[in-house]
Amino acid sequence: MRVLAIVQTLDLNHPSGGFIVGWMEKLSERVDRLIVLTLEKKQDINRQNVKIYSLEKENYKGSWKKFYYLLQWHKKMMRIRRDENVDLIFTHMTPLYSVLACPYFLFKKIPIITWFLNPGYDWITKLAHFVSSRIVSATTDSYPYKKNKLVAIGHGINTDIFNSSGSDKNNNFLILSVGRISATKDYLTLFKAINYIKNKINNLKVIIIGNPVTKTDITYKASLIKELELMSMQEIVKFELAKPSKNLKSLYEQCFVLVNMTSDGSLDKVVLEAMACGKPVIVASKSFEAIFEDYQSKLIYEYENHIDLGNKLLWLFSLGDKEKNKMCDDLQKTVLDNYNIDAFMDRLVKVFTLELEK
Image 1: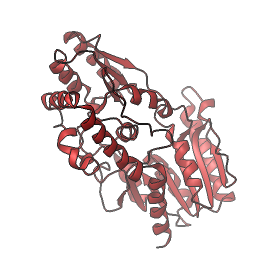
Image 2 (image 1 turned 90 degrees about the vertical axis):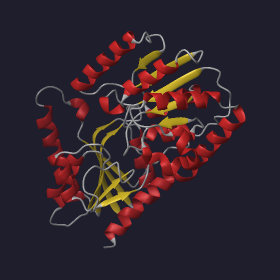
Image 3 (image 1 turned 60 degrees about the vertical axis):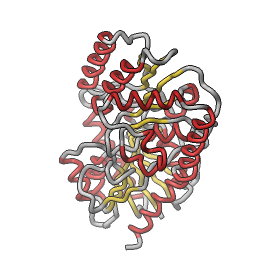
Image 4 (image 1 turned 135 degrees about the vertical axis):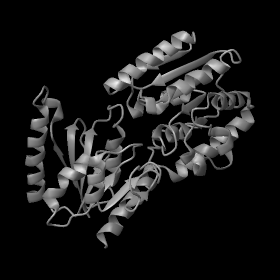
């Protein structure tokens, strides 16, 4: 099987895309030939069956950069079509890649597999759906458009990194939240929950790891800072810049609990990473029900209900070590057994194989 994978970056230090390097390494172990087309390359994949083509994003700035991207895209795609006998195209998180790749391989009838998870969609997503043979996503709810081509395969966590024991007693009630600073992440509910419990718990601290991306996000973060001032919680809640995935392990180990406020449809990878590190998690998304099993009523709160979130945090902090450690061990085992990167990649390649066998 010869696969062309189109991704945004090959950079272990990228705050949101660092994991892609690990994905490509694991994928290369399962295919005969892996061709990677990326916007930027800061890491190599040292396997003989891998060829990397970069659009060299890092070299282009200013108002003409989109023109240069398209020019480089055309040159690289023409070269790939000429030199590489591609069986299948896999695009990651950018439906536009599927749309732009289609004309180059249309007459060869090369199947396109698009990975996408997002609460919203636009006309590009619709067009990508049309040109794709299959859509892969983490859950059936994480792909917002038609389900007729969808295959849900979960996530893949690098358990070589995220695998430490969570059994050590943590005397500081440090709440961690990791993700883009955006209204879709519902940080206001977390702030209201902290305001609700702040006088009931000593040593209460909150660290939020993430960056605003758009102008709307920047405005949203400014509104959050004002809310903290109104609640007199500037000393409790701290913002930190986004960090590469590989650098999050130490933060997971330091925290008492990771809280994720994203609504239904989301299966945020950071939640699984914290679980793999043996840490408790509390989430709003019901997509975690099957993963949490017997713990779902304790660890899933009603979306936007800060009282419910606050009460679940109080319950968690009141747990004895034995009960808490058993829960953390059970959650950790679920991730290590079912959501490790090898199991994930086997599921993804199975989708490839079934498509090629048609």
